Image (cartoon, rainbow, N blue to C red; front, top):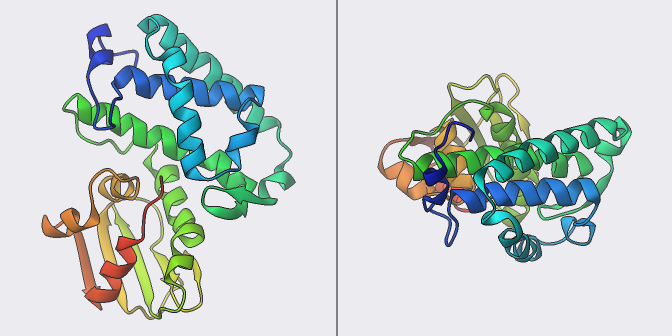
Length: 241
């Protein structure tokens, strides 16, 4: 963000009521609250409660001078990274309530990388720039893992195996077994009822609610081989906010 002109911080994004400076303020206030423990009452709550908390925090920073926003991003981002490094590794696997459902504590920490990548693209899109692939791998792998926690339970009672491949990323194809409620990297030779292939940046942004999978299917950035109905049903429940 240091390469942006001050005037570009006032450009509106696709997020209702948020300019570039609100996006920056969101990242600052989230990092600061996490480091200071000020969001402990909401971090394990529902997404609706987290979003209400965000809306109260963002105005505290949004209209500050651009240099102060940039300093805040750097200062609190570094402190957050230090906090994460200090957490004993065994705690990362402890299952806790999250906005996805019960999940390892590490998923909450991992979500910060996803959140930042998505918001960087919000900014780039508002300025007429293409989506980037820098830091995309951890964001994409987070989404694939989160789908297994958040989306698969909504398809309980369905049957079918889906394999999802993200184009041009050094990640294995990911399988989702609707009947067993299990997911993970595809094993060689595993059968699949539907195979979905999609541009990785477009997939992550659609999962984050920026656009839709129906639109990606219509313009050819998503393809489904095999049982198209089960593939479309699966994509309809993928929403990782």
